[in-house]
Length: 317
Image (cartoon, rainbow, N blue to C red; front, side, top):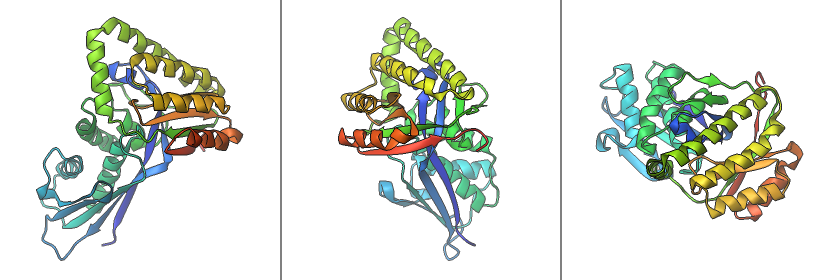
């Protein structure tokens, strides 16, 4: 049997991070320049049921039976087997690699989970539909993030821009005109679960102030949706700047993020903000296509560990 391979893209949140946990809308788009890859290879000489998981990026090489139930990759495999009603699968090796930086807001955990689920289900001859993949990935996301919004597993599963409100049906976002983003990585790891937990504690201590911030972020996300769908992406710049200020008030920015945001603006970005959980990780800048390289260079010269240029394509293209 030939090896089975599946890939899943990264993602960035354009608007609505943190507020999405509290029922406000968020917008996220896939980032195909970085991705997770899972390869499942049959091991016919080994006994039935012997599954080995290899993830060299995190120095993991172990059998499924040796991994605890709360280990995310093991939980992913067990979730697929349970969903398919398989108790003793054919012996195989599952190898997972990723070019998505960990704990940086680019959806590394969800992408790894989704690539692995798709590869394993296909290897077992029972590919799972997108809705089931997203639901299963959400359960694994709880191990990574504690209280996930559901946006990562949604946008990465479907690999299309989405307008997302927790607990409501997925709304695919129609992109009326393409627009270009530059993603700047601070190089500072920042687990989303920790940032989400700290915001929750602050919200519990001062709910009225934080609800007001979340309302403002939700209003920006709705305005941004209209601009994207009507082909006016240049309008997003000022809203990105405003959203970043709100996230600073929320307490989730950092000196590294602020420095890159200011560098992008000074290099002619139309707007810039942190993206994801904050406290590190990535920021994004909206740019004119011809300015993308200059903005990327400015980010690198101001301490970014890497810069990624991506274009959100017009719907249908």
